[in-house]
Image (cartoon, rainbow, N blue to C red; front, side, top):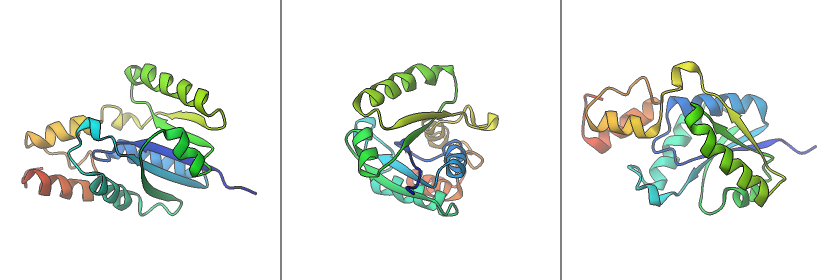
Length: 164
């Protein structure tokens, strides 16, 4: 019997507790979950691909069926190489839906063997985004409750601030 494999893709710049919530819940539904860190250099990330991958690995190490990997190119091609059955995407608000819906339809058109599953984060995480976390941290705000400890330490080191 083949195992059920899901991909949780994103730029994860950085991974937040909202991302982690979705990954943890996906890990209960699938035999293997791959948190796939997209190269996404066009977004001009704060953290390098290697740094983001390392932070994701540290954030998910307590989940035995979850691993982290990096990818570039088409998500559906990456999913095919991993024998994935599903792509899991988090939806925070209605504003996310239209964009995510378009991506899901295009991915289905490119590879109809991979399903897209939308998961809502816990209510306490619906406002969280990597972009907001970076903005708050850059301005010296406290982001401790929004990110895993390794991310908080990395933000402090990168931004040179102990006040985070």
